[in-house]
Every structure is written in structure tokens, then in C-alpha cells.
Length: 273
Image 1 (cartoon, rainbow, N blue to C red):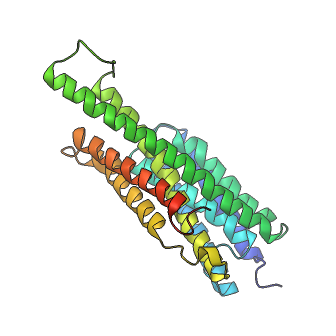
Image 2 (tube, rainbow, N blue to C red):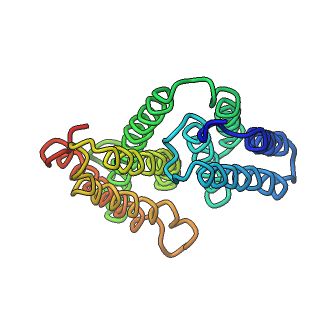
């Protein structure tokens, strides 16, 4: 058997991982089953990670881009882990109900098609996933930053009791709620985009693609800064004293870093990819 072809045990275990994610979705449909939903979901992710680790040891390489099996499985597991984490820390109604089935289908695709499709399929799937999640996540975070600016303006007008002129922004509570929902969506997508981008760059650098040798440049550092800032903004609801104005300011800082990242993409060496 070729070293990159998954064994029957690996395929069976990955299908079991997908089944656990499916069971987590079914459990989420029932009330008062939140704990069971989390246990089933994280058990599926943990089992999938073990499968990837075992497969990596068998082929002697850790990068999940060497074959279709681990590339598709890694994408599905990252998606599932992000959703489960968000639902545990900052729940969004029915998010796991709609996204976890997609992650489970990706695991099933890895198990069924991982030995049949050419390697180029995995590379295309990886790069497309990186671009989609990075750009859509950046868009959602940008809108969240704009709403953060609206929050600050509305708060200032409310404190000065100046309601006669200017546009209507709505209540502070409404603006904060919308910004938090966008932060959840944008941060989750941006996390997947950042991880896939980093691994994709390392993979291409290791294979001698010259334009990626300067991968860890200002663009990547700024992207990491964006991720950290928005991670702080996303987790501020856990600290009641760090909400409202402070969270809005953090969103604006993230927006500024996002703009810096776009500049880096255009003008820094090796930025346009």
C-alpha cells in the first residue's frame, strides 16, 4: 500500500469522527442537551485530530497538504473546532446546526474520495478555502469596525443629548449586538483563513516556490495583529467591565490594522497572491 493512502482503520475512524459531529447536531435539536452537544462535538474533533496525527506519522510528514485525505479532513476539523468554540464562548443561535453538517460532510469526503482524487484537488480546495474565509472574514470584521464607529458616535450624542441633527443610529444595545454577531462570524472565518494561509505558505516555501520564501513578512504580522485585536473584542462580553466603548475602540483598532494589511498585500514584496 502506498504510504499516502489511508488505511481502513484511518478511514473508519474519520467516518466515526463525522458521525460524532452529526450526533452533536442531532443533540442540539433537543432542549437541555447543551452539555451532550459539546461533548459529542469535541469528541468528534479530537478523534479526527488523532486520525490526522496517526496518518502524518505513517507518511513521515506533518503538513496536512501532502495528500487529499488529510487536506480535506484538516479543513473540516478546523471548521468544526471554530464553530464549537464560538458556541461555547459566545453562542450564536443555531450556528452549529448549519455549519457542523458541512464539516461532517468534508470529513466524509476525505474518507471516501481521499484515495481517488488527484493531489491537485486538495491543493485547490485548500487555496480556495483560504481565500474565501480570509476575504469574507475580513469583510465581516470591517463592517463590525464600522458599526463600532457608529456606536462611539451614537454614545457621544447620547451623552451630550444632541438628537436634533444627523443620522439615526439606533440604540446602543442594538449596535453592540450587531457588532458582536459580525465579530463572531468574521473572527471564525478569519481564523480559518489565517491558519490555512500560514500552512499554505509554509507548504509552498518547503517546495521551493521562490515567491513564498518571504512569507513571514509585514502582511502576516499585520494579519496576526488583526486576529489578536478582534479576538480580544470578541471575548469582551466575558468581562462586563470591558464592553461598550472599549469593545468599539478595539474594533476600530482592528479596522486600522485591516487597512494596513491591505496596503501590505499591495505594496510589500511578495504581497500579491
